Length: 419
Image 1: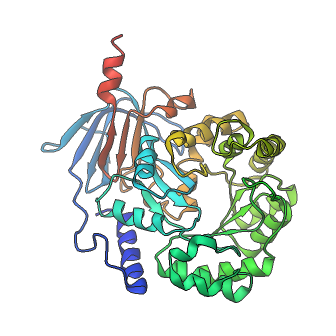
Image 2: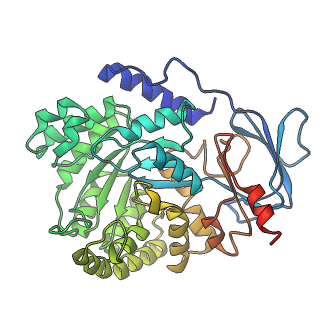
Image 3: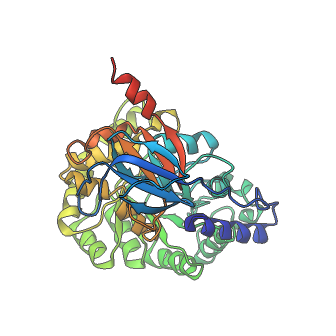
């Protein structure tokens, strides 16, 4: 059994004990992944940028057992046909809430996601179901309910949240909201230090939580052993959140060098969610509102500048889609990788921002994020050298999640090459 899923199983036990709901599939241990040997794979080392000659990767119990050498007898052989093998992608900012979304994440080459808050505990449930092998989906670090003053329809997710109405606008209420999330088994707490960008009538630069309020959230989350991610477009709110000890800033559109330097000093990650701001700025996307398109066009050049300055200062950049993985969300992380290259990152740096770096952000660096012996077999195959053209990551040919073949388009690729 892989270690990430063991930890999710422990979270399931905690959630069940605390909220007294029947365990979803708690009586059934995850089905063991069959042994695999991926042959003729050009393995990309995302730490160094080296690429192997066609070789074999052996997978046992969902973990990479060996790299190189002949495949052992008695295992299922998957011929990668000389295509390039990368670690599965990590999406560090999602609002995934249903089974179709979990499948689309895999189709996009994403094998691990971090939740970014919402009005339900669906991401907790999806993580449990995926861990139990009941559904095909990525590993999930769930965030549960968004920790902010506005509770709204989230009271349906847990009736205790009604006690925080009309607003969770005191430190005591914010702490209680964090504790309720922890009881549901979340792996991260999401809060908001500034107003949102995707709503008409808001100002994404406006600070909404003080440093003291964010610090209380961080303290409560830390007591439960989980980090905090903070939505922050504006600089003042972001600086307060970084000063209070959040693990990552989400978006960061208007960050100053002062804030970026504090982030570098504190080891705070930046998840720009750039492609979502592109979406805000264009017609026909998830935010198809003329007023928001004007806002998005104002934000885009400023966010590009922030990404360039963050890289120069040494802030670690991470890919996040800020999507629910609806029908139009496929390959959003691959597009984010391409955008990072357009903004000045090298192809290797951009790929690292979707693999080894978010693994560290999520505390999973000993479990996933690279193709190395002992790590989980979260793998994708692409048709050409991604260090020469990151665009090939938009079309994954093979997805293996925790040692299980989730998507296999290798035969289609072979057939298409005959035209």
